[in-house]
Amino acid sequence: MSEDQKSERLKRLWDLAPMFVQGTPHAKFLGFKFVAIDIGRATLSLPYNKKLVGNIDTGILHGGVLTALLDQASGLAAVSSFETAMPVATLDLRIDYMRASKPGKTLIAEAHAYKTTRHLVFVRAVTHDGDANDPVATSQASFMTTARNMKNVISPLARTKAMADLPPATKAKK
Amino acid sequence: MSSLDITEASIAKAISRIPYAKELGIRPLLMGDELTLILPYAPHIIGNPMLKALHGGAVGAFLETTAIVQLWLMGEPKPLPKPIGINLDYLRRGNPKDTFARAVVAKQGSRVANVRVRAWQYRYDEPISILHGHFLLAVNQDKKPVTKSNTKPNNQ
Image (cartoon, rainbow over all chains, first blue to last red; front, side, top):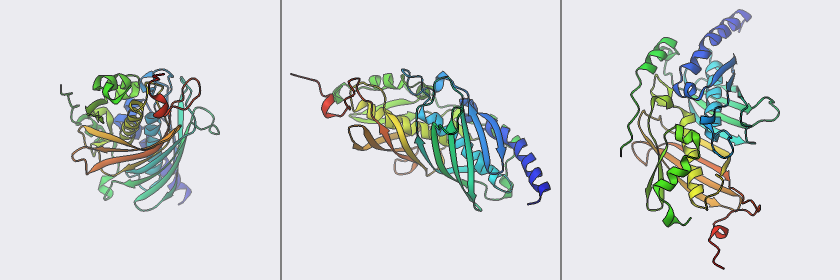
């Protein structure tokens, strides 16, 4: 890959990446923020939010919030590792919870797609609250592209339209 | 709490102590001593709007909550168990409809429990996602590990 091609690819990624977070309803719901992107690497952050706590007595974020954050950051790293960015689905995700996150602190997730094949990507990620050497959780995941052909490449416009067309929430039956 | 005292209301109360689970609208369904949790569909749990697929993180959080609530109701009311390490397998796309989950405790030690959880939508035999993982059980204030045997009411 020439320097020109690389900078062109990076420019496209920086244009696309914020949409990849904003255009994902659950990421928007949890308040994920796009931080940075590189080829095969992505960084997201999550400001602390009381609504995302796992135990009302401790104020510590729910493990599932870390799962979602690591999944999203890893997915974005996977998308960016393809020569032409393609949407992906998670095949499996393993998470190790090292310690409780500190209530009130912003979480940062850094993901690295270290191997990409035609359809598969293998990603490692870490979540911390400021010091990458003191991780809150680490993860290992594999992804598969959901694009069967180049017609399914990511389109911000189509995604925004699709978000507006989602079916309404189910009503609780009494 | 013996299994006779467990009601949907008491489980709903436990879930209300988990703000994120409440935020997702997770609610219990109890048949005898068998607990099923329901994750109602809402647009904000979608991960890919083009495919109308549920977010892996939302499904993962739901499975993890199911494991935690199942472990919680098997013991005395006490601090909630904490995840140590979990494996999530995503088998099928989560469609924009309600998801169900049931947990099986494969092994309960004095400190750590091994749990398997299955989430499904249309058919139980066609799970959309499976979790297996280890959870750290709450330790009593006197630092004695909590087990099923030492949480029985003291009759002496």
